[in-house]
Image 1: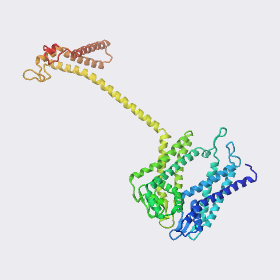
Image 2 (image 1 turned 90 degrees about the vertical axis):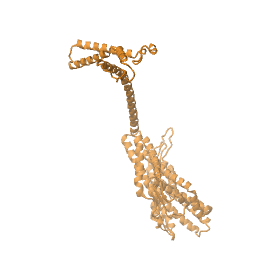
Image 3 (image 1 turned 180 degrees about the vertical axis):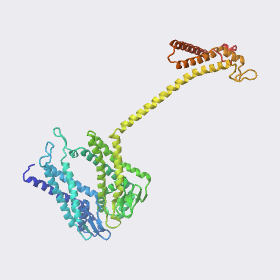
Image 4 (image 1 turned 30 degrees about the horizontal axis):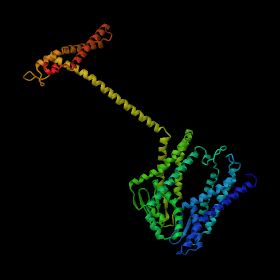
Length: 552
């Protein structure tokens, strides 16, 4: 594009024409249904002019402005914005300025901004916003009547905000380019410096997920309260055309109710009139407008405690955004990662608070003077959900918590297995050694008793013990083990030699060798005695050696 004198006039004119087109489309969106309802409403005394004036008031409300009513039924300011209509107007502004950006050729063929692109974009955006605000103010002044008077000041401010916000989105949208073989692609969020592009992308994902959670709750309530809504629709009896207009009005209010449902899911309270409130703990409603969609509200009363588990739904949406953020900043430096991790929850909290604030308002000065989220009840639970969900994702994905936990569990398992193996090994060893010592000790005790001339078992009057063995049997058993006493003496001598060796560590080496030989000989005798005890051909001590069984 040239940079001569018409380089300023061209974006200026394009912005002005874009604003007029958006105002015209927006006016048609509200005027046509109003005229259709007026024509179809045979019972109404409103004229076509009244329908047009009502449409102008609705257009101001759709931008976020206010209207003062004095109908006798409703007196006071109406500041509740039909969010659906507002979203439509923002989308129209974005599409219009996107076309302007393409015609201004802000980006060259190689994907780089041309010289003067920012200046032309700024001029077109200023012309668009100014023209849109002034045009809406003119329409608000025209829409004044005896029953309704739009507030011109609020119309100017709200019109400028919608135009500038939507126009900025459209201009950024026009910079987007698909990648080719020769030119890299251009993404709008990638134009932001790192790591803020990743933060914006993740926060947008989280906010859309939160809005979707609120919309899902509204749809579920509508499906479960179909009879109540049908009864309200039948009471109004709007007819075919009137029913279409009523449906359009409810569609304009549907995103508003979705934001209210999101506030409830986050743990806040939504007020639907004086001394009312809807939360996860209880529902208190009063007199509401006769709109069928409001029949989807829960019945008044306390809700079960399990309802608080619904707070996990928005936490899941925030967690998905945090997962996307961790993946996007994985290749950045640690300082940039920490900046992104801190910025993400702040952006999400601010965005949700802005949405909740835009859906607050009132209708008149009566019971419906306060409608929408109670902001004081939303801040703390919102911070808790966003911070905890983000912190949990960061602890799992952005730190060594999971690998450390796995290593700790593996190490603990190895220690347990090693301890069990050691316990099995120690249990098998002492049992074998104990059996050997026990047999030797029993022989030593038996031999000792025989040497003292006493019996270890009690004898009855016939010279038999409790098992029926006689003294001769005991003598026979003693004869079969003549080494028991000598073994005990050898054991005592070995112990005394060991004590002497401990007391004299520098003793003669020959004495130590002789002691070791004596100990080895004693051990061999003990082993031979054990072998003799374990001989399967030897009869038990209490059995007659001349019996047939012993002969076997």
